[in-house]
Length: 110
View 1 (tube, rainbow, N blue to C red):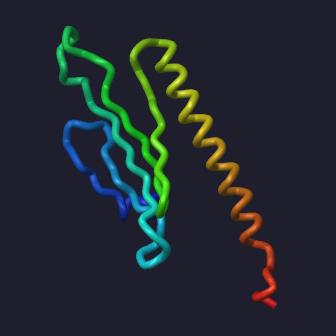
View 2 (tube, helix red, strand yellow):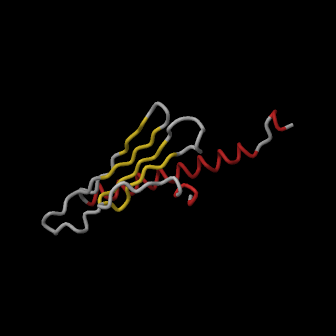
View 3 (cartoon, one colour):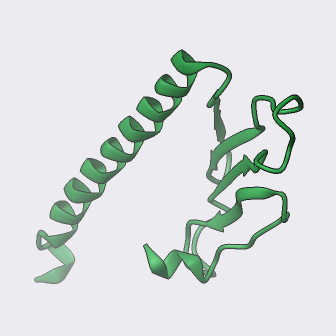
């Protein structure tokens, strides 16, 4: 995944992660992207600590999805981590299947 880091851009300094990453090579298709943001609330005093702002958006040329990740309490924290782990697993399985299909010869390869 390190090849993606060259396309990443940090947008703010008060964040654990704040990146906008283009998903396509330059010149191909449209503006597919991933936008990730997790606010860093570690500097807030204990009394001022709150649920940090989080954002995960994935978009292609025409559609964007936004997933919610709450850290409000233990139940929501566990669910948010479960949700992202489930998504990562599904993406890894999708990538493996895509790579297997890409390795098959096509009619234009003969």
